[in-house]
Image 1 (cartoon, one colour):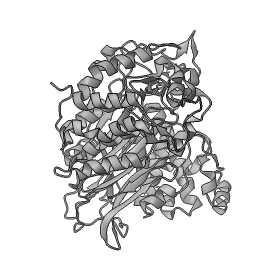
Image 2 (cartoon, helix red, strand yellow):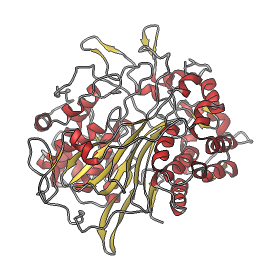
Image 3 (cartoon, helix red, strand yellow):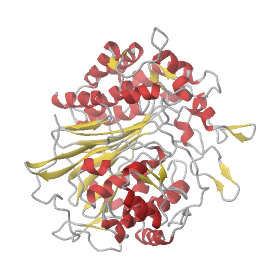
Image 4 (cartoon, one colour):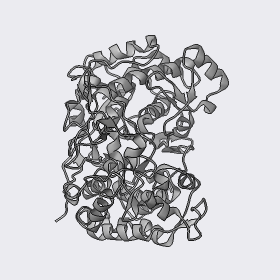
Length: 593
């Protein structure tokens, strides 16, 4: 008996109808929001798909490490599906990019099924153990220091990435599960070349990189740390992926690996309460997809506890903000983008949490009248925005949860046109710094609010609770045309800045008609609270000066930088093809062969 069974998936039209969208009853096939006219009449960019556009098909893979990209393409060449390739990619990323994601972490996956036209999401977010309480990160009535919390056993939730992949692969896979781990096992056994980015993380002289587990793994026999170009082997990881390949998710969640995870979490300092029973009880969730029209497209993201709803809210506000259309050289456009972010983050921080524990007003946050009212506030903002009151919203305390660096994103399209957009994480760099069975364990529970209550408004939507999933900024996107056909996919790491990075890329590609790579290369601008973090060196001096005149004074971005990966189906000089991109702030590549 397998631990996870396949699930049925509602059709895209049903998903949109349930979300308050209806398919316009006209030959144009445009999408209509309640209370608005069809967007079908909006002018399309020159390369936008039309009824005569050939179906978007692969192979295509974009990910943050060339070894992972090759593993995915190999699976596609062997006849595997996009989800099959995703399993192989994650297994390799967990080895060669352990600072960002791994088998000990969690993920959100969006899947487009080319045969049925269905879009769905898989929630592999970690869960708090059964013994977790709202005061998990309080000591003697005071909030723990963030660094102490990360390095503690209390920070680790039940890893969900493996379970999620197993569920998705049982529904969408074409190859045998056991055949998807060959590259990961070989690289772990024979060794892989340490990349410059990994070497930089290994060289960090504090925190998780200096835990006793990381020190043991990253120290060579001569006592020096591994550096760029060195060959690093991980026999424990090779053993784990061999066991996972042979026994599937049952072996992972009910056997030796689970026992090693629980034992590591129970070690000092500040041991956690995660048990083998917690691990065995974990279940991923198929949640359907949250889809909304944007211009002549449809953008689909995961529902909460992902913050995809916030990206859709920003896009909806952008449609009501003419300055956005001025393009990437316009100070007015960047100012508008920043102000809309402030409004988006204020709402996200107050209302989004695990829907199994709190009522998240998804429909209210996307209500046309509410969105219009929020967008109208942008021009007059002079500092941090306050949260609004969307229809159906229950007031919670505004959350100041930190989401540090330690995430990755990849996109896959197979030859049949099935697609995966997946964001995956161990939360911080090397997660909690603790290792079990050859991989790092997540510190995902530090994504919960450390303070469970606020005196002025009461409980936090994102407070700790047993079995609860922490709110996440991960928001992988699938892009469709107005007829529900695949057009593209993208996503990024970046902690709380993920929402800004994904929105920037979507606007740059869908509004400004930039290539995917040019969209990713644009400077990042993150506006949360009363400041403006940015890739200051990427903004031309004249544009920076024009922004400053508008009150947007840029400072270096303090959050994790972007790692955007994705593609858009466009007509080029030789016909329709994938216009792919890989963020040059990371080490990834985008390939079709």
